[in-house]
Image 1 (cartoon, rainbow, N blue to C red):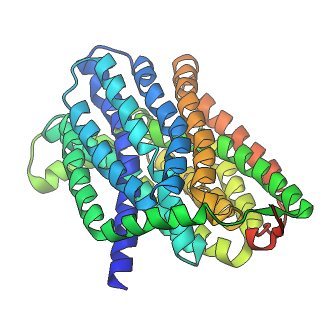
Image 2 (image 1 turned 180 degrees about the vertical axis):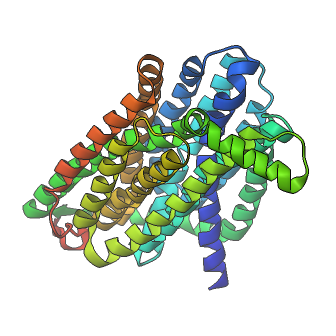
Length: 420
């Protein structure tokens, strides 16, 4: 039992690191590199775009390799590979070099979601809560990217934000390998045995329902990814623009208590982003519990309505009110995360689950990559208020799509009717 808890804990750490590595650059670009390298924020985002394409495109081969070889083995590759690449990225000197580093980080980051989620949904019951708890760790990685980078900008330089997590990830990789080595060997033997089993054909009604659910999953995945990317990647910059007054006041209060002479506004902004991300991640636990009790249809509708309300309210707001409304739309953005993964876990066959998650994350992270130029274009031409209105429209699309979800998801256990 203790080994099982440690196993789940290490998978959660992996999700934490996955999102931290992919978003460190967002804070570094927003607060430092545009000044240090003399490049506009919108232009810097272009160098992150290939990394998010890699984050999506390489999800499918990662899932395929996991199903064919070993899911735990692929997790070891994830920890060590992304750690080494992050360290190398910390030593880059030009925008092109950091763009290459972010691309390779994206390649290794692509491993986690199809592989880690396949492990979580196959190995344990109470799927909704397990996915939600795992998702909270991913959100904490998002939040910690802003916190760590903001702190190191003020106290040690942006390069250490890549190097120190890289060292930690490599150590985690060897610890994970030690814990799961015997299982990696057993998994390889089980995979070969499974390939010799007789295949079965699904019933027509199951296939029809599965196509319907899959279409909704992939549509809402794409639209939700735009919302997730816009909120998580742009939030440090949004706070840098909208919360300067509040950050200056809080920095002054900190100086008064500590007896210092000059506030660290970047640290305060990074801390505020961390608090919003961390508090909003609680929504996943609530959603996970509701999924196990009520299913995805009504839960997804409530989450979409929350997004619509708060995105519509955000334009023009600053300081304390903007912070409160940002917390509201982040509750919706994070609350939606476990829903599609839950539906895949309930409808997909276990033998192919990592590959199906791979397809889901190809869609998700390819859209994440496309969303970066969208964010840059909208910000450069109209500012963040227009972006919030676009995101409110995206929430409407999700709400309409979710209304046609079936009340009960098709089960793979009931699907087979004949051997091939």
